[in-house]
Length: 107
Image (cartoon, rainbow, N blue to C red; front, side, top):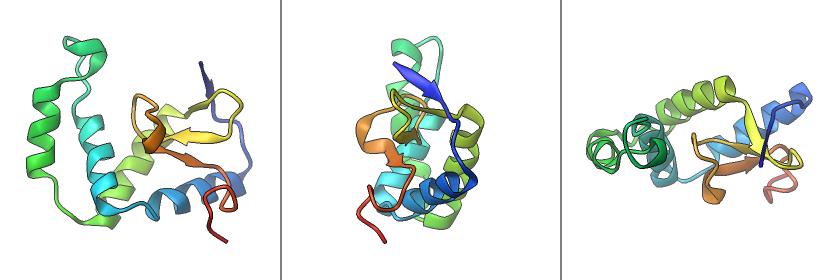
């Protein structure tokens, strides 16, 4: 089950900071998942589009995080309980970030 975002401005800031702290390879995977959304394939995911995206995406962590944050902010989905924001379109566990820095192990 998923919920819509309904947090404080500080929580959104922390979630964005947690996103930007992810390794560049994780950012590339998340961005590729956004690029692989396809309603005609595998429950909205196209493996072929994902593979193409992974081959062509840059390693520019800032640009990747900017694009992901824009997409995630538009989607505004989090886990049941509102603890973790979905950074990918599907809410995969490794592609979610906490709405607070403490839960993410960052101070």
